[in-house]
Length: 260
Ligand SMILES: O=C[C@H](O)COP(=O)(O)O
Image 1 (cartoon, rainbow, N blue to C red):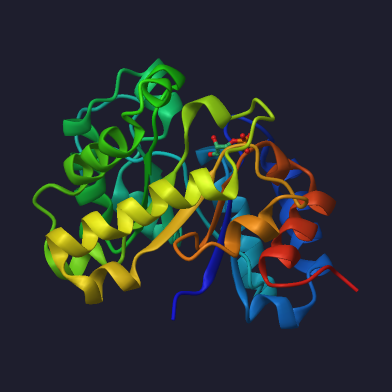
Image 2 (cartoon, helix red, strand yellow):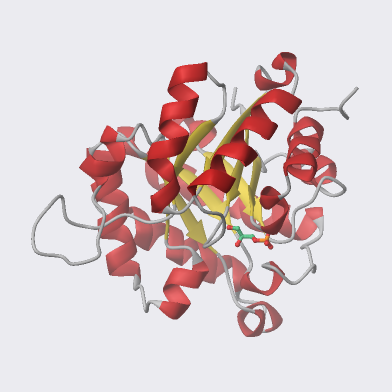
């Protein structure tokens, strides 16, 4: 049984003091019983991670955390890079890999994304492998093939038992930060195809274990219908994850009901 997963990608927002305040608000506004039904994680900028680690460990908070990127290398002369061993030491459970903003603004290729997936897995950090098409690909009707090709390229060379630890995030680029959310049926079409492709390559048992998230303009008002779909196990949330009240509401709705 896959646990519903809500991950907040803060992108390049919030300094370490603002980060502490936001995580505290989330942890204390979501009643304990919801954490049994939904896993909640935040993905802050690198500069916030140590502060969040100290607070989560010290106060034994149920919120998990991770990073937004990782180097393909473990160490060495790679100015500006942050490695998987460094993130593991900071207690990161997750790292996003291949987000469309990195593919677009940092020219990340499928080959690099694949190397980062493997670097994270090697150090027991679950990669959140982001895939998704731009508008022209969708309009041409090639979105399913495009997205499943990105998936297979991202997982190339991973062992079958490693694949079950990967989280896949389907984020149609045209829905990110635009307010234009994919319909639950559109999102299910691609998430279902992702699971079918995983089953074809790695077997049904592994495919059933992989959590598949939808991302793109997710809010408390639309998450309920998204997680009702068979193959959508949660969401990768951008803008709405920066507002404690909205993110908590959204997490509660993903867990099956509104806050009391
Ligand atoms: O990683 C998150 C996605 O890019 C979605 O962002 P958004 O919720 O602001 O559309």
